[in-house]
Structures are given as structure tokens and as C-alpha cells.
Image (spheres, rainbow, N blue to C red):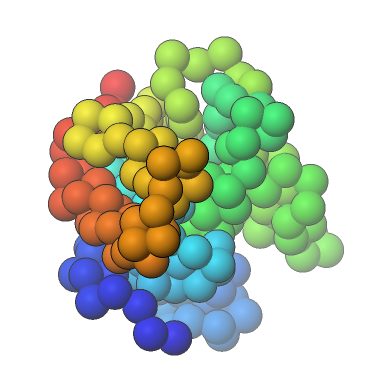
Length: 194
């Protein structure tokens, strides 16, 4: 898959996953997620995909500090509902954290490694997303505000709006990914942690 070169410059998210180690899928259970892998999973790179990636990157660092985050041991809560278009972000965060609603891995016969009932929507929290460690109960609230550095709707309208020209439609993909690069380059501005 060919993609914009800046994708490779984005910091990876590295976690440990006991299930992966138990099943021999990854040495020592270490899983390394790159932005291109998340783009491939989502099928595209947009403000929501990049925002969810950045929320995971910053939120897991805040939650675990110098420790490797423990995939499968993180509860993920959204203030928005699926009707609020949180589905894409939920897929990204599910992929990274292992958390699912009732669709994920049910666990082994003894219940170990259950990934279900770790993701919730429409929760009364003061942010877009909350990560909670299941082992300690520590949590972090995360908000993503791309409008601090870009105007996604305005950029989108240059290709879809009534004033869109053939030239603006043709150059849109490049300008769209330039906007995504701006978001990713300004992680400390677009991500708020509480």
C-alpha cells in the first residue's frame, strides 16, 4: 500500500498483550502499532482516525507512564453514542486497546483474556473518551479538538461544496492529507488530558 511519507514519521504505540504472548502470536506479547496499520484497518486516513490514534497515544502514556500499556486490561468509555458517529474512533481504539462491547474475544474456558464488556457508549464523562486501567482503577479523560489547528469541514467543502471546482476536487486528496499531517504534528494542541 502506497501512502503519504509522513505516515512513517508518526510515533508508534507499543503495548504488551498477555493473550498474544500466551498464544505465541508476538514475542513477549509486545505489539507495535503504526499509523499506517491503523489506516489500513480503517481503510482511510481522516481526522477521526488520526484523532483516535492520537487519543490512544497520549491517553495510554498518561495512564501507564513508563510502563507498557496492557492491551486487554483497559476499559474504554465514550461520551458520544454510536449515533453520534463514534464508531470509527471506537474501531481504532478497540484495535489498539483490545476493548470491545459484546463482539470481542470471549476469553479462554477459565474466563481469562475476556475482551468483552470493556467498551461503553453514552457515558456521562467530562471528555470524549475515558481510559481506565482494570488493574489499578486509574483513569484518564481525553478530548480531541482538531479545530484548534485545522478546519476539517472547510477543507471537505472544497471538494464537496457548491463552490468546488474541478481543480479543487483534483487537489483535495493531497490537501486533505496535509490537513491530517497538521493535526498529527500538533498532538499537544489537539489532545487535552484530564
